[in-house]
Length: 273
Ligand code: ATR
Image (cartoon, rainbow, N blue to C red; front, side, top):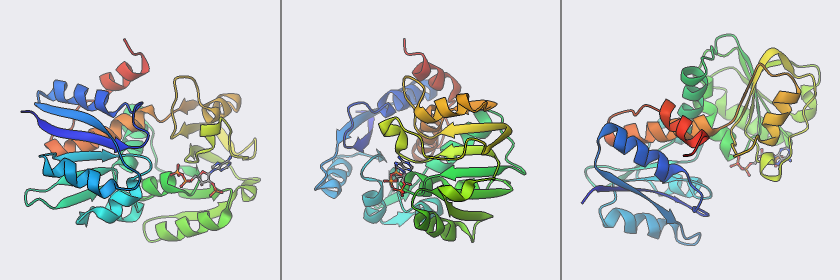
């Protein structure tokens, strides 16, 4: 029987993870099955332990269980520790569960490897201070960026997140209104505003000439923040599909010891057959 992996979330029907990991398995010649589990909101821990007890070797964890996964594991990577969330569960040889978080690595690899971004010296703005923002904080601060500004509708949450990042790199937190007069070379949208097809209220002139926009969300049609980037003359307008595939590739590497190629998988998702 092939070795068992799965993604757990709620809802889960539209998850692209099975298609991504099945493509990785085919590409690397690994004999594994990757399924999907509709997690029980009242018994996430039971779902995980049942999967592991029946031989499951690893789980991808998605909304709304990443924080519960963080609390559940026996040990955590430093990245997961800072993120306060786990998106990758690994069954260790002794049966204990290790939690990692590959979202931040996925974002950085997409920007650097797939799009050729040079972080050195960049003024980076991340909008949002919820789970998605916290998940990518540590890897962002490990790049050679000049400054990371975290701006949030609720300023106090941006201050709290910036304080968490301060030991790791140059970061400040503020409210959205404090962005007046500021310019950024890269603006990352880590808010959930796009789920209602809206954009956080940021100044029209806060993207520097030649600056890029990156929406951590993605969709079959351009997201609201991608449309904002296009309307504000961003040199590059990127959505989160590449990040999705890159975080999956890093999870696959953690489980299987080999990092799959991602370019063709991103292309397949972008242009389904
Ligand atoms: P996630 O895990 O997706 O980050 P979350 O933890 O609920 O979800 O955080 C949502 C983030 O999107 C927050 O930063 C939220 O701002 P507040 O902290 O002020 O609530 C932000 N957000 C959601 N809708 C928004 C909107 N319409 N405009 C600006 N920010 C928004």
